[in-house]
Image (cartoon, rainbow, N blue to C red; front, side, top):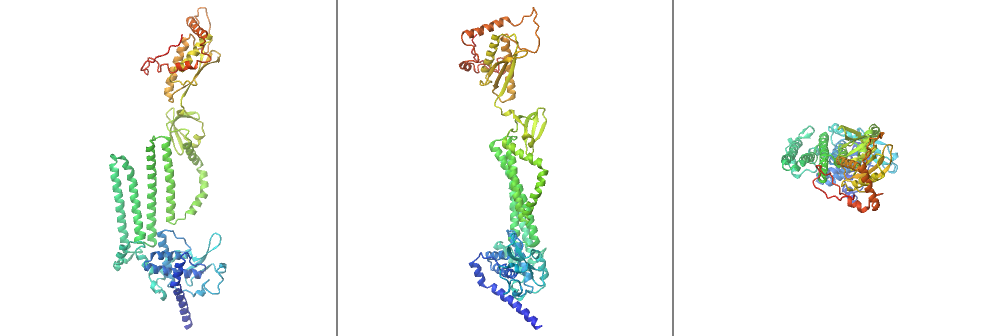
Length: 625
């Protein structure tokens, strides 16, 4: 019996001596000289020693008000954990609670002497042979386990407290509360409870002083937290509500004044969302930095605040993106249905979606949701999804091609395939075209981009091309006169481009002498072109009939003795005029002289005299007869 007591006393003395040696100022001075030195976790004994030493040093720094040193020591404690904590204030608090709960357990159990712990004896293998040590070590009489950790290259990281142990540490603490604290740890008794009931690390001095002056009843635990924390939390929610109410009221004032200044309404809803985000940040400050909720309460509160804040931020991103798109459209004075307008709106939505995805990833990281496995899963399942939605993806890509290439714009008249219509909308999936029968035709972008598209709205002029069939009774000089008069018509007409404007005797048809007319009308509007074409056709008829000729048509002519045939007087007159040109060396074949062409240019009245569009008389140069 006496031997057991002496062995127990010897074990405690050895641990007490070890802890006194570890906590000595020499160790602190060594850390001060080399702050980059990592904690020793090379063996189970070293890990346990590091944990106990650094926790005590962190507590003492916290009690002395040295928050920076406390954080440094706490970060070294966290390196003995086999879990990765979020690099946030919430992660730091969770790690601190876990460390204190584990410390509360270890200072109540009898630890074996260092020589009995792997890596703590003089006969242990050297540190460069970690494989000689066991894969794990368990504190005798407990479920607390320290296990070997390897990286992806199978290199030794060190020995750390197992994840299963850390997840159950709160349970272990509650079960060990009935055990007495070992004498060498009496000064740390109840440290976890004091940590939970004290204000946050960044709480204002007035809050800390007020909490310290509160009566003992204020520290009564309700739902896992002292009463003063719940009261302060309610006050914080009230102030956050006041922040949101002020923003909401200002947004209402902007909305109400939009009748006189419409631009104010643009900022009403974003201002309301900004006030909500400010209220969420203030509440988070109260929860983490002021009252410092702990345990499940902290997890629930920070999770809800993160979801609300990130959701509001995503809403704000979409609003700002649309407001920015509207501003660009207004600055560039784009039409509502123009292609550039739709492109700006589409780009703003894509940017908003990308920013929202980044916010969602940040939310997942805040909630400690593993993002890498999710992305890997999306990569594996994305192939199947891509195959399933391949037509939709093709249409989306083709939509961007249409926006970039711009073969048509909204409002333009075009021919696609065997159909004609006016483009009304170019979306991400399809093109909406209103046909000639006023029906709307929806064509998928992928199919539309593969069609041969004729854009009538972008032509700089309209082609006037026709072939006249003159009767075979027309004499050669009559034909020459018709050719001259038709050329003069094209040159003189103000709506016809001079080059190229040609009239040529093309050849002999089955029933007629073929005269080809080719010219461009200076208008892009189809309706105006039809009016000019009508005017030209009427003038052509006058010229043909004025020369004594006529238009042929598929028929058989039976000549009787009583038939008058062609107008003999007009025929003689035409032949004399051509003969005079020949005598004067002014025969306009194969074409008119350049100077004469410019003299004739734009001398014909259009619209013709007597029409509603003719408002004045134009002096005309009479052709030589």
